[in-house]
Length: 213
Image (cartoon, rainbow, N blue to C red; front, side, top):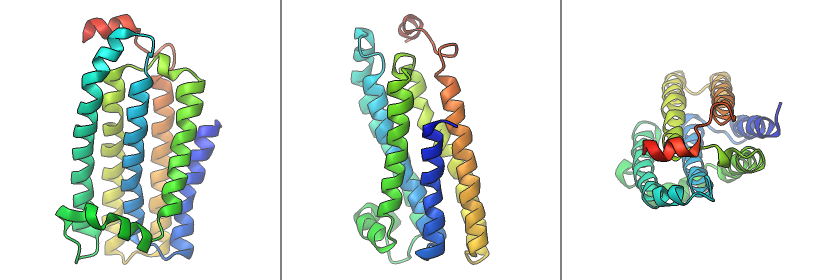
């Protein structure tokens, strides 16, 4: 088991503490998972910036693709957050303006340490896999552009559906723990698939990427 997978599992274990000792229900749990999307997007921007740093053609592509990703993924994440607040959030909060209430909601639900654990987990993976293991030399901009969307769609469709079921059940602790376990398993599977995608055999040579673009 690699250090990044250990960190991933530990970060995903923090919500168990939140459920058992901080009184988290469905909404704080799903909000933490939504905040993880923001963390994933931020690290993906760093990955795009550092991909093939010595290739001038890559830098030309980054000038367009990085701002495009920020705007597109940012909008995608915003809509996801809006739906989260609309279906699960406190009713006085306007879903369209949830960003204004977000800092207060994070403090009220004591999500700070949970967010910190996710940043640490993704940061370790970024350092260990992307930098130390040389994935930045093999990752294409096209792959990096689409990678977070696959994670969000597959993982959070599962989590949101599970959250809806748990909410209907009245947020029992056992059901919340099962939801956390399902999310953790999906995370480990996605992390493993990502590592395979960036192995030397699976990576696309820079010359092919440039010619394809």
